[in-house]
Length: 88
Image (tube, rainbow, N blue to C red; front, side, top):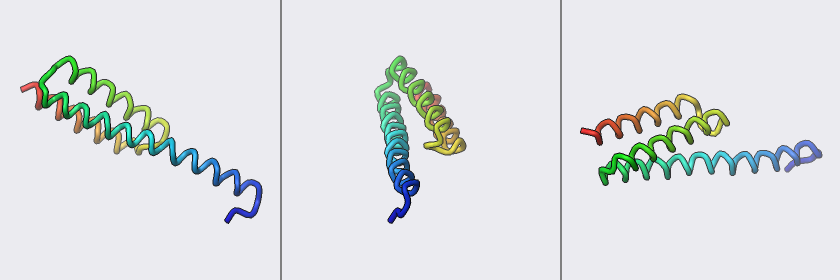
């Protein structure tokens, strides 16, 4: 239990940050699933758009600290492999 005013503020701040981080992680997973579905469908324009959106979102999440930069880089590499495999 927070005893001081500053501790109460930190609890509020941490709750907001936790929700923001959850939003970044959840959206990244959703965009990855959309990319996978686009690769399965074979629509090259949609694959390109979904890949660009995913990479942009992962970069933003890493910059904000919601994802570790190595995690973001790994997921971007996985997405790039998925896209290149779909082009064959």
